Each structure stands twice: as structure tokens, then as C-alpha cells.
Length: 128
Image 1 (spheres, one colour):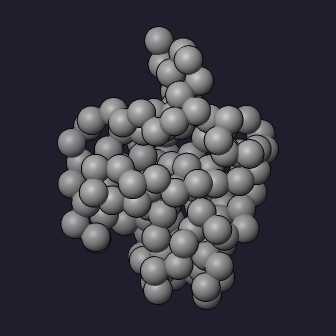
Image 2: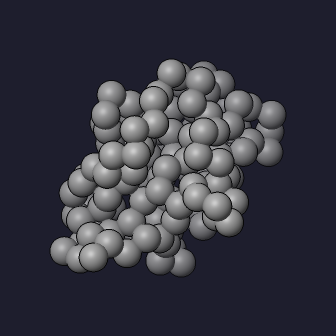
């Protein structure tokens, strides 16, 4: 059984197709990434998934979020940016992105958001 902690489906507020300017394709495939314990609470990690980079954030409030790992403005590594339970700030030029919707409060192109959850064994799973 999979515990869904965020999603891009109806009612989630997330835009499934947001920020896919990189040409990323959506297949609906579930990818197992590794143990959630690899990401300390309040931090993020980037993963290579199906030919693209996805950052998974382990929120202080207990949730998970998955978004494009690369800032669309200048290619900054978003997993290295400062974040809280709502936003991440790109470490290069301080663009701010909502972790639930991918929208930028500072005018950058939006990020893609991906459903992410935990398998029964504690393994992170992301759907792309």
C-alpha cells in the first residue's frame, strides 16, 4: 500500500503539467527512489528520474513534495536552496517557488510538480 503525501491530481492545487518546458514527458510511471530516511527532515535531495532531475523535499511538517530540481531561470540546483513547508528559494538568484503548485512568486517560469509518497516499506515513490 502506498501512502500519498502530495499530488498533482484534482483538488490538490498542483499543476501536473507546470514547468515542463524542458520537454519532460509524463508517463504516469511510478519510480522508487530510495528510503525516505536518506533525506533529513527539512531538507531536499535531487534524483535522476526517467531522464529528468526531480527534487524531493522532506518537509518539517511531515509531508513530501516533488518538483523539477533545476530552476528554469538560470539552472540553479533547487535541492540546495533554502526551503520551508511552503516554498523553496533558488540559491542562484533567489527566485521563490511554491512547493505545492510550482508557481513562482518572483516571475520565473513555473516548476513541474509530481505526486510523491511512501511505499509501505518507507521507500520514496514519485510518479512522472
